[in-house]
Amino acid sequence: MSKYIFVTGGVVSSVGKGITVASIGTILKSRQVTVSVQKLDPYLNVDPGTMSPYQHGEVFVTQDGAETDLDLGNYERFIDINLSAESNVTSGQIYRSVIDKERRGDFLGGTIQVVPHVTGEIKERFRKLAQKSQAEAVIIEVGGTVGDIEGQPFLEAIRQMRNDVGRDNVLYIHVTFLPYLTSTQELKTKPTQHSVNELRRIGIQPDIIVCRSDYPISEGIRDKISLFCDVTREAVIPLPTVDTIYEVPLVLEEEGLGQLVVDKLGLKARSTDLSQWRELARRIKEPLEPVNIALVGKYVELQDAYFSVREALCHAALSHDRCLNLLWVHSEDLEKEGGEALLGTAQGIIVPGGFGVRGIEGMVKAASYARNNKIPYFGLCLGMHVMVIEFARHILKSTEPNSTEFCSDTTYPVIDLLPEQKKVKSKGATMRLGDYPCKLTPGSRAARAYGQSLIHERHRHRYEFNNEFRTRLEKAGMVYSGLSPDDKLVEICELASHPWMVSCQFHPEFNSRPSRPHPLFHDFVGAAMATLREGAQPSLPLSA
Ligand code: GLN
Image 1 (cartoon, helix red, strand yellow):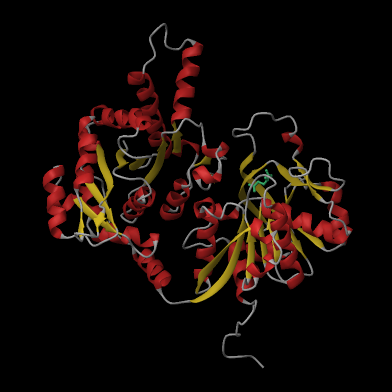
Image 2: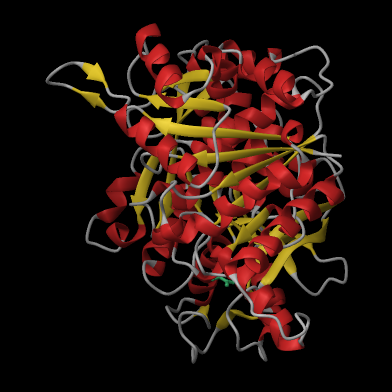
């Protein structure tokens, strides 16, 4: 039977609970304990797929096509596992399922209540994941902060689990924040005490408290939290702010969290090996030569909207012994007079995914700039649509070519709705989602980068390359380097006459791992490193 580790958050949100959960997974996996992870999101949306990136940040897509919280991306990258739809549960899903059952008459005339019906449905999701994954430890993160109205049923469900599966099989970890008062120069524990009180009020006594802080945590503070929150001293785990998120597993391990979890749950742990992580953290902190990549998007004010893209670039840069210098360029700024100056130092330009017409012309400008100046360009999903639009405008000598997403009556609809999307009315979970196969064209840049002939990548789109234009663009130098096995769908395209202008219909960023950078990202960054920009010097020794 799986053991359950429930992780709650206190005091404030955005203190890195997701990274902490991912790191707990890492340190358990390093002891050869098998783990799976689940994120509980208390909002009423069924999934984040319909939410604006400004509200939610990136939507992470699993292999099986679920649109999920970006924390799942961190779980996958840290623990190096592939998760599925069962790993993200929202209040919307829970209520929908309970109400569907009620309408079917499953409750036989009973009154449907939060306890036991809603909490029962939540617990069912815990068990389902445990059963499917067969993991020795299932880590469950409760989104939001203790005290939120909408989080109550989730907290009640995790409380009930202690009696359902037995005390020895359940562990509660509370992640809090210690604010620092500049006037008195001290860290304060009172908000942590209050949030633990709030947890106790509903019947949960945390076993372990992880304390996030921007300042070092003294032994005195640790003692105080131990005393007031009734946890042993070694179960107060300090987690000061670190230089890179990839250091968090190391800090938690150093503070004894791994051993504590294993002991408390009686898990069969084997020897610990975090050497790969130590090496990764060391290399990230090493002073490496930068590579300048411009990310041209319309949600750049909220960098979380491009979380996996940034991570994938970072992994690729590191694999080339470079550090990533990411230039965030708002596509609407490129639309302004002289906006191109923002790309002056970029050695590579990446245009990631997105929806809607706002900022599109700026992205087209970025693609045009990359093509004309022979700067490596990498388009992801929307970024591929942009590359195709730009190239078509160039060869057809017209500003007309467009996607029907942005201009429904364009004379050159080079990007158009997927045929199966034409009848789709509802917005939730109706895109072409998740893993699909793609065969690579021998000799193409993409095929060389992958070193494989058949790949599987994750998708999230409604629009595609319009096959009516295939021949015309091909004659002008576009190479279709990846196609669906039935040849119907262009999955990757590139320009023959350009050093590196490659775009894909899928989202390769979701498959990048710190120790295994994605082949296209790796190749793109390699090409960017070879590109000299304004004021840059070629690195020594100079070849003759
Ligand atoms: N808006 C485009 C589509 O729906 C691109 C989607 C994306 O970038 N994920 O096809």
